[in-house]
Amino acid sequence: MPSELGLVGSTFLTVFLAELGDKTQLATVALSGTSRSPLLVFIGSASALVLASLIGALAGGSLSRLVPTEGLQLAAAAGFLLIGARLVWWGEAAD
Image (tube, rainbow, N blue to C red):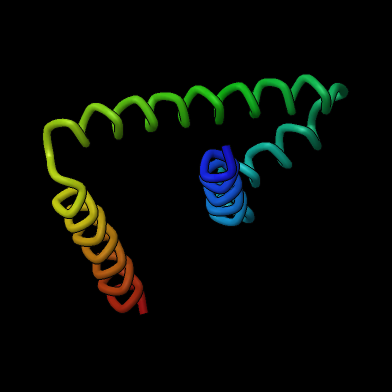
């Protein structure tokens, strides 16, 4: 049981920190500011995040059966490096 709680806790902390200031949070703030029902905006936003997380968890579980964990981590790292390089390149091109 403690290892399951640790996994839940580390997943919560990672996703929570990743979502702070993210486009999702900014969109939720904007929608809530133009709505008379912030609770309904919260319910819609939370539902969307839960569904996106479910899809990610299911896809990750399926992929881990087909591709070794090291391969998935390498692919994710390469993807983040490519995204970062493109952002740096576009940032320099805009100057």
